[in-house]
Image 1 (cartoon, rainbow, N blue to C red):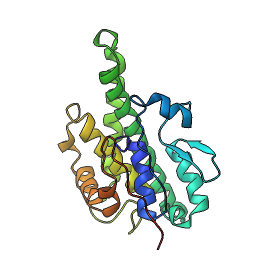
Image 2 (image 1 turned 90 degrees about the horizontal axis):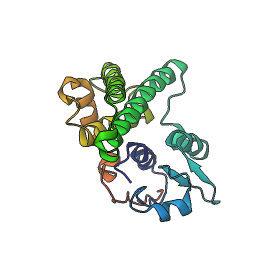
Image 3 (image 1 turned 30 degrees about the horizontal axis):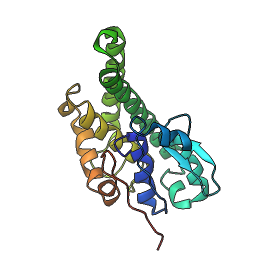
Length: 209
């Protein structure tokens, strides 16, 4: 589902690079049997390659796609200094995603009497630290590792969009002004608008020119 920031980062990358794909929005919770037939690990995103090979984890999927499609590879800079900058921002954004998802699941899936406040506070502190650092990394103009949108930018915007949309009541988004303005610029791009963070919506099939 595109309401998963991990699924969305892959979809936005594919749309940005104009790589043809078919998106099947299957819920990990409402459609367990259907998802299990594709991937018994019940982990999204899951890529089914043209030869039927099943690949899991957004980072692994993007790494494979980068080997197959030069336009995906081009979303990561080649110069070491820029690649390091992009890698740092991507790592921060992925940490923010992970901690935000943990907080969401803790609240949405675990009964109140089984929620452990010290654990929740620890995760919330990690999320805040990731967002503070990511806020410093996001530029006021252009993109994180150069003039063109890249994986780092896509990941940062998808992470912040998830935080605001799903656990916005737990995070004071206004304190991350740079990240908020940066994400707004990204969300205005066609690839982001074509893959909104919505439950059940399929990203459009993209055909190469």
